[in-house]
Amino acid sequence: MLCLSTGARWGEASTLKSAQVKSYRVTFLKTKNGKQRAIPISKELEKEIKQKSGELFDVDYESFRTKLKSIKPDLPEGQATHVLRHTFASHFVMKGGNIVALQQILGHANIQQTMAYAHLAPDYLQFAIMLNPLNGGMEI
Image 1: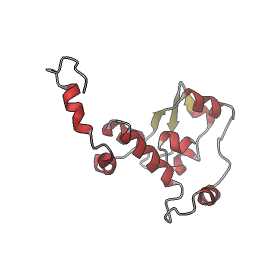
Image 2: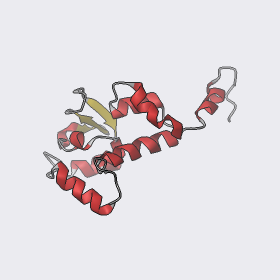
Image 3: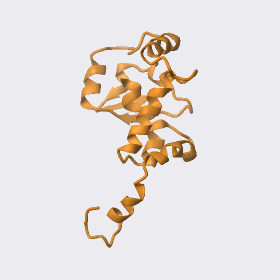
Image 4: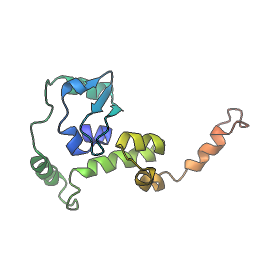
């Protein structure tokens, strides 16, 4: 649920401690690019995480991958856990999320990595009407 709710990589989520969750944010300390990243989370997810103290996960990558594959067996090799990250990113864009915000959430160093999801927002140009200063608040 954590990876699906935040777009975190399993390697980032697996080292998470409950102390890294506060004020409806989760802070990932051990990230792929070495930079800390704070992601907003729901009240419900924070409540669930806070029920546990210390390390949140006591399962290694291989065990997690095996369990996930038993639920969804047709995942490509190497994508068993990463599919949660892709699902998060895809739904974020399809629901109108900002591509630059998604870049920060996913921790991509280069916007080009994040642009792989841009095709999922075919109506993104409609925001030009809504955001136009001459629009006067008209809805699209």
